[in-house]
Image (cartoon, rainbow, N blue to C red):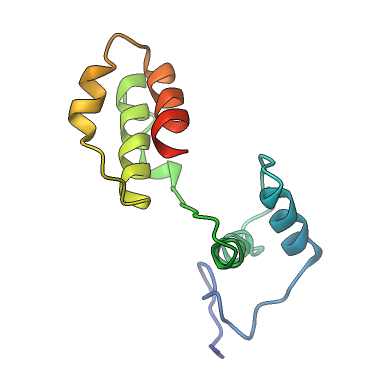
Length: 126
């Protein structure tokens, strides 16, 4: 158990200072049922800690999870193709998939970036 105060960022999944809320069970149950979920709240309100705890709980039931910080992909300078390619690479890395991204991307170059992303999710990731 971790007994320290953290003033910025997410708490470790085993932090004794974490306050369990109704949102913990609601998010967990909704995700288990395959629902798409948003967590919206003000700054410094526990969203990241909720994500860490929920991912840990899901992992205990055999659900594989990835957390991707979309702010790490520059929307200002990336083309649509670059943005989807970066997202796919982050998923490949997060799940340690045995996929040669460059070959797969080139084999699917006739499709739009959005369709490539969709096909990657349905045919490779899932």
